[in-house]
Amino acid sequence: MQRRNLKHLPALALFCALLGLRATAGSPTYAIRDAQVHTLASSGTLPRATVVIADGKIAAVGSNVKIPAGAQIINGQGLEVYPGMINAWSNIGLTEIGSVPATNDASEIGDYNPHLLAFTAIHPDSEHIPVARANGITASLSVPAGGILSGQAVLLHLDGWTVNEMAILERAGLVMQFPSLSERTVSGGGLRETRRQTFSERKRNYERRVREIGDLLEAARHYSRARTSNPSTAVDRKLEALIPVVQEKMAVFIQADTARDIKNAVDFARKEKLKMVLQGGREASRVADLLKKENIPVILESIVALPVREDDPYDARFTLPRDLARAGVRFALTSPSSSDVRNLPYEAGFAQAYGLSHEEALKAVTVNPAEILGVADRMGKIEPGKVADLAVTDGDLLEIRTQVKNLFIAGKNVSLETRHTRLYQKYLNRP
Image (cartoon, rainbow, N blue to C red; front, top):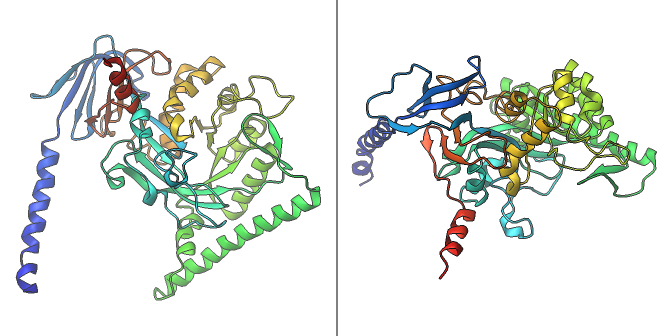
């Protein structure tokens, strides 16, 4: 009986493969014609151009592009085309309603969980995902929280029936909450005291935590050598997860905010030879020269917030992107909360209003996050060969009144319906 069943497996596998080929071959081809195209690439902004989308990728861009026969044509007159925005830090898909524990799967108990994958906890049907899409966001990094080594982040396309369909990078980087020497921690607007400790007590706690992280990384190096020389060495999931980290093959998102903590984090990353990306960075402008020298990119916390210190200028957070750009530090803007991912274009708009150029503001939510997250070879710009992640709008992408008319994710013209629009229609048509 088992043999009779097994003999059909090759035919079944071939049938499934043919179905997949048929689905790919039958995917629609689109042409967005006569639109203003912001490529953010070497060709700059094209005032009246056509973008051809085929097989999930950008097939052609330009003013004299031949439209393939059978392509679905979108009249782009009066419209603008931008690369889809990438939110480089969030908990979208991991947290639905903050006050309902059953809908939160963003953190785990324990301080050291490098083996945990945010990928396994993503909820593809989150109501926050279509809301973010409706504002032109096509991808987001979703990160775990809690402890010191929180786990590994996942880079997602914001469309798909399953997390496997959504995932761009299942293991996008390790999240590290770097120990702080500060008596007070940054929370919301301003500095707020959490507990009173003497400096010697804070220093002891800091040194203990840093030593623990260093010991774990050293153990991972020994484990890697042992596994290489003897593959039958017992598997340790935590150390296994750290092998690409100590080999500088995986980015480490190190969270630090104050100037002193950022310096300490940079020193630690240099000593341990880590591929560091600074996250948070509320006082990054104070150490911009160091970040530039060490070539460390920054994923900024939301800049639409109050100053960190009581004696800071009122616009200290608003001007942070401008200051980093002037110093030559690469950075990405973010809107971290799952319910606020939709506000990403307004973060860039705020930055532009406070000194960042329009092009730099656009790059901070497209090109820069793609480079920082290691996917610039396929995302972030409008040029042939890139994945077709595009936002078609009726105005400037960073303006709050602008409406997204079409959104393409991996070549698919996705729905812009959200819970908000459904409720609007429901009560608009109320008897």
